[in-house]
Length: 78
Image (tube, rainbow, N blue to C red; front, side, top):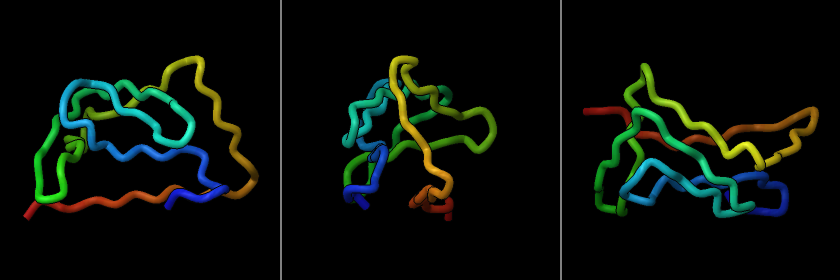
């Protein structure tokens, strides 16, 4: 969801490389141990469930309020 209360929106649809980009505020995430998968909708980041993670650029700042939610859409392997 991308509305006025959205702080960051990472689509993970770059398809190549080790960087992912926030389409809301320009934050850059450095992905570690993440691979790309092509699907019918384009590309998706594949996390190995063990050693995959993302670091944001140090100059990026996001202020969290007392209450917040994190939305994740994922597909389990078949």
